Image (cartoon, rainbow, N blue to C red; front, side, top):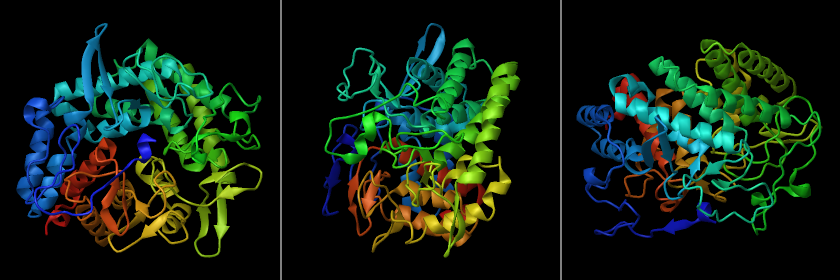
Length: 474
C-alpha cells in the first residue's frame, strides 16, 4: 500500500539525507532543500514575494525556512500546466503518488487564492485546475483519483467496480465533489471571473447533484458499489460492496472517508456538513451565471441536508454535552471519533468559515473539546507532540494536518503558538511537513513528499503573519 509506506530515520546527525525524487533532505543549519529554480514546475512572483516578506520579518529563522520550503511546494513539484483546446488545463499530483485527487488538488492550491489578483499566470494556473477537475467529474463522479494519461494502467485495475481508462482509484467519497466547488467559489470570489463556469462545468455540477441524490438512497442502493481483494479491512466495502445498512433520511451515504478508508456507518457527518457548504457556494455561482435551475436544486438540497444534520447527527455525552457524531446510520447507531483527514469534525468551522456562524457555537465548541481529548480514540499524546491521527496510518501516528487545523480554528493565541511550536519541532529535520509522525519520535514518519500538508502549513503561517505576526517570532 503506497499510502501506508513508512520511511524511518533513526538519527539526525551529519549530512545524512532522506532521498526522494526532488532531493528533499534532512538538513542541518537550514540548508537549501527546496527544488532548484530550474527544476521547478511553476514559479509565481507573488508567492516569492510572500516568502521573502515572511522570512525578512520573522526572527524565527527555522520557521521562515520551513515556510520557504513548504508554501511553494505544490507549485514547485506537483503541477503540470498546458493549454488544451484553447482552455488552461492543470494536472496536480499529490506528491509521491502520481495521480490527481479531487480533494488534494483543490486543497493544495487553495492557499494561493488571495494572490490571484497580483499574478495573472497564477490565476491561469488555478483556472486550469478547475477545468481539469471538471473533466474528472464528467468522466466519473464516483472516482476519487485520476490520471492525466488515459493509457496509464492503475494498480487498482482489478477492483470490483466500474473502472475506466483515466481513473486511478474509484472510492466514493462525498468530499471529492465538494472540494472542487469550494475551489471554484474561492476562485470566483478572488477574481470575479465567471468564464471558468462554462457548459462543461455546469454539466459537471448537475452530475454532482445527481450523484448526491443517488447516494441519499431513497430509491434503492444506487449505481455504485466497490470491492477490493486486500488484506486491509479498511480498503474494501462489505455486503457486496454497498456497505452496512442505513435508513434513508436525506443524508448522503459515503462509502469512504477522506482518508480513503471505508466508513463504518454510511452517513459520514463531517462530509455531509461539507456538502451543505458546497451546495451553498454552488447556489451562489449558479445565480451569478444565470442558471436558475441549478441554483434551485443546489439550494433545496443544501437546506434539506442541514436540517437533517441538526435533527439526527448530535449525541449527548456526560463529559462534553451535545456533540456531533463522526458517523451514523439513521437507525440509532453511531461512531464517536475524529480523523485528521479533512473534512473532519475539527475542520468544519475552517471549511465553512464565514458561512454559518451559529454552527460554531455550543455543539461545535463541545465537539472541538471532544476531538482534542483522550475520549477521541485517535487523539494521541506523546513525548514529542499531541494531535489527532487516523486509522489510515495506525495508532500513535499524529498528522501535522490536525495540528494545523487546530491552529487555524483556534481563538486562543497560546494555543496557536503551541501549534506553531509543535509543527516546528516535528518535521524531523527535513524542512517539510509529512502525512504523519510517531507521537514519541518524529523521525518515524509517513510520506516525505505530501504536498497537501506542505500547502496547509504555508497557509497557516501566512495567516498568522498577516493577523498575529508576533507569534512567528522566537
